[in-house]
Length: 231
Image (cartoon, rainbow, N blue to C red; front, side, top):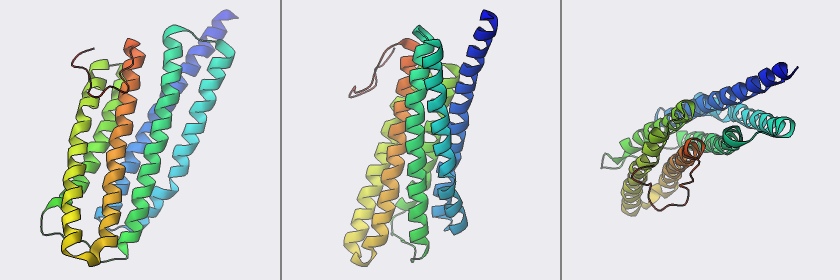
């Protein structure tokens, strides 16, 4: 009987890891689809991205349920307890990233009905670049979770500066464009909203990476001004 209980417990832990990764894969796709719907002015893709947010939310509920059952039925300690609390926090960030993707798709629908914003500078390429960077950060943070690789997680934390820099550059370029042509303010503000959402995706990916470090090292680096040089 104890062997069966242990086997069931390990199966539940395995399902928890798998559910987090499935949710993460879906969220990665959501980011890519949202940005593509914007750059390609694809209304059907934007609507599909918004509709798929329900799937992200269902994964969030499933992981919560799994974690609560593991805590209530098995009273895990030490490393397993860190895994469960980490999974709870990671899925909260993934759910919010899913929301960011849906918001970007909503802006894509609004912008599709308007003339494209065409600033003289080539700064508009920064949105797809930001989207790729944000998605890569999420992917690497989840990869660090799978591998339990604290060094990879720390590298994800360090990469947040790059997406922040891109957001700053795009903000300044679009602000200058609005000053030059006030008739574009409504459209340009939507693009700034997209940029801000992608910057927030980077923040959530950093949160995930920080939780991986806690999982592996039992050390919290949250709220530090800059990531530590070593763990």
